[in-house]
Length: 260
Ligand SMILES: Nc1ncnc2c1ncn2[C@@H]1O[C@H](COP(=O)(O)OP(=O)(O)O)[C@@H](O)[C@H]1O
Ligand SMILES: [Mg+2]
Image 1 (cartoon, rainbow, N blue to C red):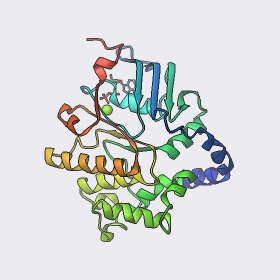
Image 2: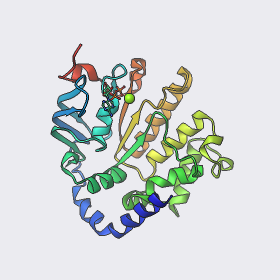
Image 3: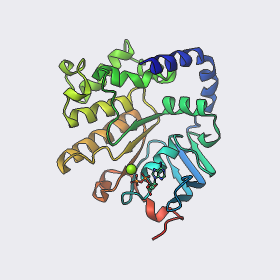
């Protein structure tokens, strides 16, 4: 809790620089994502490298990235989110090269513009459902501001999203462990969507679900990204999910470093 409080406080004191960063807002015609000549390798792993010549994503485009386990899907998403840094090349997200930002600027950029859904959801066990959604706004003044457009408060927006995702008020004060996997997944979705980030990144969030529930979740994710106008990058090793997307990318084929 103290880590969160400290970060939130640091964040508030830096709101002026956040406003300055609004200059990095994308032009309407710009790409949501633009990768050029990207090379990444792990320090102590010679078995794997990611080498991508070019990859672009239009604003609002929904892309499905597939490939077998271990082919680098999570690595690519972590590069896009600025969690990992490339050895070479540029990764422009909404016009800003995240590979060239300081780590503080990168953390802020991620909080402001990217909603992430992880395979294990990464909900905070000791926070209530509603706080697990609100946490996305604790680190970003921009997302707080966008979340409260047209509603009374950021809490009201979290409640609206949870209701829309069929999570009833009786669940809002519960802890994640008291919810089913399908419900936890929708909490993770609400957290990714609150404050309308331009980009939503999903790392195999349906892997633990059966086919029917996978499809239902994908439909919901797709609808909500459309409503929010967000670009969606969804990775999975299940190739049969691709039908719901604008574009399908085979990461093994895209990766120039791929070794058989
Ligand atoms: N922290 C790490 N250090 C070294 N190698 C790693 C690390 N994390 C992942 N890898 C390796 O990078 C490759 C790609 O992993 P990953 O991106 O997780 O694949 P995917 O998400 O497609 O299953 C794998 O060979 C994996 O073993
Ligand atoms: Mg993975």
